[in-house]
Image (cartoon, rainbow, N blue to C red):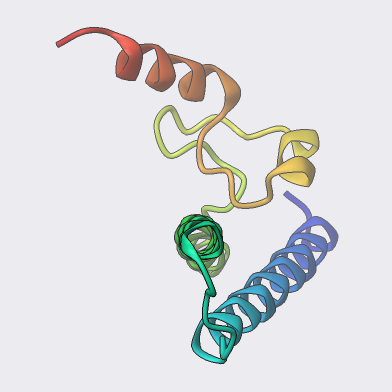
Length: 119
C-alpha cells in the first residue's frame, strides 16, 4: 500500500472517529440532561424505548471506535491493508467502504459461515 493510500485512510479513520465521539457525547448529554419527566405510562414507555435505542447505538459506536483504534495500530505496525487471517492484501475498494476492515472478503465470509453453524 502506498503512503498516499495510508494518509487517505488515516484521514478517513480520523474523521469517522470524530463523528462517533461527537455522536456519543451528544447521546450522553441527551440522556443525562433529560428534564422532561414522562407524564403517563405511554410517555414513560416511549422514553424507555428511546433510551434503550440510544444505548444500543452507543454500544455499537464504541465497538466501531475500538476497531478504528485497532486500524491505527495496524497502520503504525505496517500491517494495515493486509488480512489478519490469511495475510493477503485487502482491496482498496473494500477499505474505502470499511476502512477498519481487518479481514479480506473471503476470510470474512468464512468467519460468518462458521458463526452461523450450529454448535
